[in-house]
Length: 384
Image (cartoon, one colour):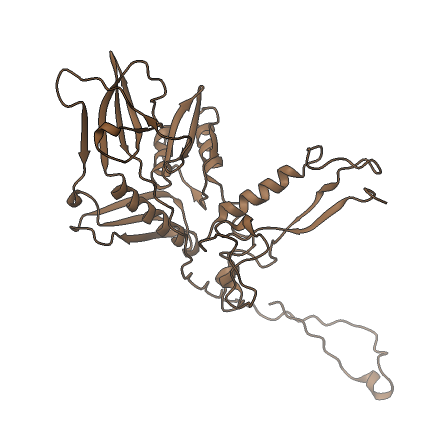
């Protein structure tokens, strides 16, 4: 009978790979002839893609939603929201799987595969930001445009919400603005709308109408190091290092992230950070007439008269008779792929055994026939 039975999803999931929801049934597996990347994927790992796919499904199939109508036959929703089975939660415990590569040959597939072990409990950036704000008594922010995950984050000392969030904002390229009384977080590469054309400028009492400062090559880092906590090395300190090809000089920048990252993710984030420093090396200072409310922190502006074809991100506003604007170059840097790195093999724990425990039981013989009934028998069992 049509609409007579609810639908169960016995297996739905998504690979933890860039653009995984584009083709959720495939994932890279060097040992398989069916190994493939999702459509338009660059092959890097992406835990957030897997998480967003699952969240979208769970939200869409909730009972009473427009996408899941009720059956006129049995009165329940078309897709039973209590029968959505995620793929896959492995019975092999994390982190033994994937670290025990000496036992399981598919350990290398965990990074980009459908496994939820070791990923599902990791906070996404939006949830982490709002958790920090809640700890400081602040209302939640709008974080729909924030992407990314971490394995953990530590706020070790009493501090302000801003100080606790700054390491996240720096390494993940986040900007924050106030819109309608709410804090709004987004990535620096995210474009909300076309750049605002600045056509009227105010000339101050002294100085140029537009002041441009470009950092020289020797002031920019040629090498960057990022310190973090590595979950696959028993939560000991880890370091990622990236070089800028073609950079002049030997200036080095050391960064410290008070959180838990896998080394492949830390390397990708550090590469992004180093690229941003070079691409966004130019800053502008200029003044516009009041009120110009659209030119606010977080807005993208363009000054054709400045002779620079680049767009600029407004970073600071100083209001007076005129609105003084500080902005930095808003060059878009494509995120570096999160490449997998070799993980240490988990050491095999030593098995400590005690003295044998012997117990004699007076049981009826009666097993077998003839002389077999009189034979002495021993049963042995060992754990471990």
